[in-house]
Length: 409
Image (tube, rainbow, N blue to C red):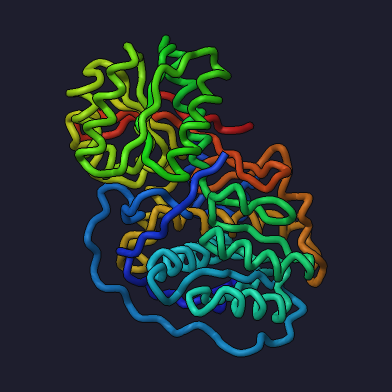
């Protein structure tokens, strides 16, 4: 192993599912996993397991050594990077998958100047963050949940250590906190813009009660306004069949519409779509968010055939997932691609980063961005990631890319 890592390699139970908040090809790309070091480089609403579509049941994983504990030895040859993820507790499955992904990226890039150490946030975020800073780490990758990001930032900021978090809660971004998480608002903006380009002008929405639904509604209103369309109705529901049926009936009372946003996860989309077809409109185009990208059941739902949603591309992710299953004996969480990409980004920056000096934060806001498993992305000055998204259509048993993601900004 060329790159140094103190992380365990064994996989964990992948049935846990963190909740998440919502906020405002050519040959060279196929070699990304092999030559990642040369690349130019959660909160999720609902309760679905974050696994790739069509994941198979793999054999049991092979045990590996436990993580190193205690103080880190003196090291003047490597950049010290802290990985803060839950390795115990209810979110240990996704945490371990993220840790495994970073290990794979270190191995794939053959990074010679990075030492990464895992800190278990499942045993307490404050203790993990304080230990990471005390050990001399110059960059923190993670944590996963937005409240943990805030707690970590309160400890890391006084030390001048930036954070690359897996969260997508925009409220936690800024002041040296950068979010790798996919921002659902961007997927709504993308699919609305595409729908308008196809002649759709009148929009409606079905959104769950709560903060997620409120923010989805606000994003729809602003997105439709920006493209010159009209929002004719927005109805909330309580995520049960009776409430969904009532909400869809109310949609029909506000006149005709060309497209309806169903802003929830795949499980709720499957449940709600038949009511939309029956009670609201049998012809309106159903639009979704990137939350649908984690559901393997959508393609088999008749009422969702022809629906559109925007998300990151799965092309490189599928290559990575195959390699992950071969190494760890199980399918990765879809979110784990963020762990892999965090290492690609760090390796790129480390090419011109002197060991022992502070992390060069200004390089994170390079307008040209970076490239990873999920395509090209860049950080805005407010710490929120901007991603190139594709539009997919649900076919009879499959998904089809109908508007590819841009390959550069």
